[in-house]
Length: 115
Image 1: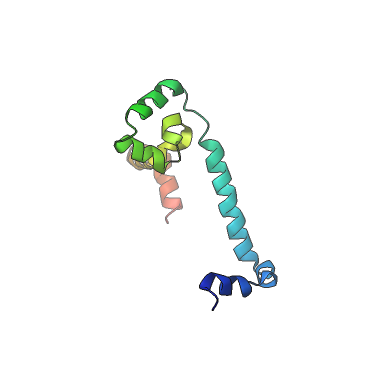
Image 2: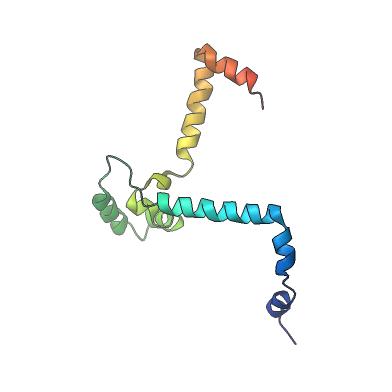
């Protein structure tokens, strides 16, 4: 009796995959995003000494910092741009929302782009 994996491999149809243009685009976009993320995880933040940060990460490898470093793929110990994750986006979003109340061009932009 064949396992589920063997049955799936036997029924795999690459001709149908070649016709699925949307699926190919999504897979290629995902691969491109992963490549960009991996390259970006090696670009250090300006003003941070990566050697000192890696020493700090090595000292706290067993704690919470070690878990965050593991989940970021080592980007935290290298203190790279993508180690910040979504925090710059959140900060920029909050700043823009506060500026809409104080700066009229931002308010006009908000009214024009009502999503």
